[in-house]
Image (cartoon, helix red, strand yellow):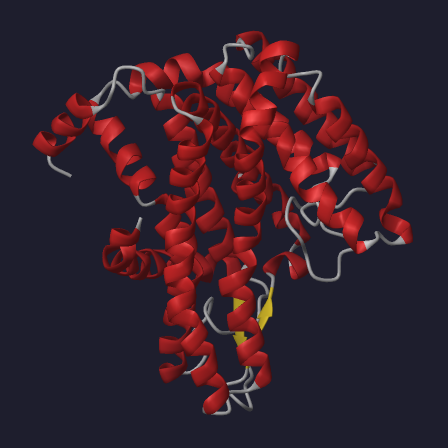
Length: 364
């Protein structure tokens, strides 16, 4: 990245831009991508190599659970989304702003569908194994659930923002926390589908509302002093009470902290966002340097493209790996040493994703 390009990017940045929040958004996208690449194992059947199925290294290595606390970054993502939405609705009419926002979110998804719907039909036409079609559909489509939640919260911003302005960022989250607590209490007895679906946007509304609070000047540095220790202590207590330690779903676990978000997921978000609020002044100083700011801009400009295509990059590398057998960390079952082998493949995934991004970024 040339110094001249970095300097031009810095010079073109509006003075009112909150660079620290943009860096948080970039961190969240990188966390989601790396997290999926590290826990999404695609396993080839030794007797029928074209038959693929999904697995997770977390099932065999529960000691890896603490890594998920750093790589599960949906809390920061919804926080940054709430901040951006509040700033957008403060300076533009709600309906034109919402139409523009939805257009930017949906265009990359429609392009992804335009590629993968025919590809799935082709896999069926060539009689690909059912397990292969299932794992491909799951990896490509499952991450998109969060976009539906994000769209709902984005559409509700003109309603949520005045509430935060009047009541502050703490009071509005109390009903959401109460509903998530009720959801967690009901999990052992089976959650009705409608209740679980309701809990997803309600749970992620908590960091979204805090992001609105920051944009409106209602979430101060004191909030970081409270959120960080409360999140850490609350998460530790919940794990001791029997919550799964992993921040993401693990096959065979009694339930997932993300389906719907549990109190542990929100405690993790509180800890991450508390740390961010405390570090925000320092980040703002660092990001005044063009060399530090330019990569953040570059990531944010293609954030949706990266998100939509990162699992496609993994699948393309896995399909290529079938030509040489079952490479360790790529197509073999997770076990001892698998996470270290997977690290070797991350640069290959990244290069493939860079090529896909170059091809599809025009739609974002």
